Image (cartoon, rainbow, N blue to C red; front, side, top):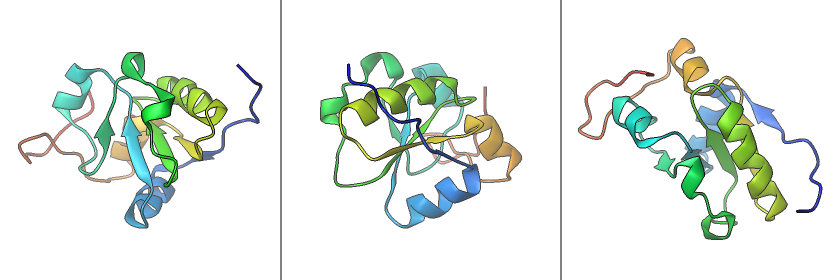
Length: 113
C-alpha cells in the first residue's frame, strides 16, 4: 500500500456541517454499536467489511467510530484508495458530548455504547 499523507481530522460540529453540505458520514463500528445509536444519515459499514473500492469518490467521506481509532484506520485505507476522507476526532463519544443527535433504526433516541 502506498504511503498517504496524515489524515485530516474534523470535530463533530464540522462533520455535522459538512454532512449537511453533502459529505458522507461512514460509520465503521460493529453492528451492536450501530443498533444502540448512530447518526441519522450515516451509512453503516463495519471496519472488517470495508472495501475501499465500494466507497463513492464523488463525495467527501467522514469516517466515524466510537472514539476515532477504528475510523482513523478506515480513513487511511480510504485515502490510499483515492477517497477524499476525513476522520471525525473523538468519534461518537465526542458527537454525543457536543449535544448532536443520536438515533436508532426505529427513530428513537439513541446512545453511544
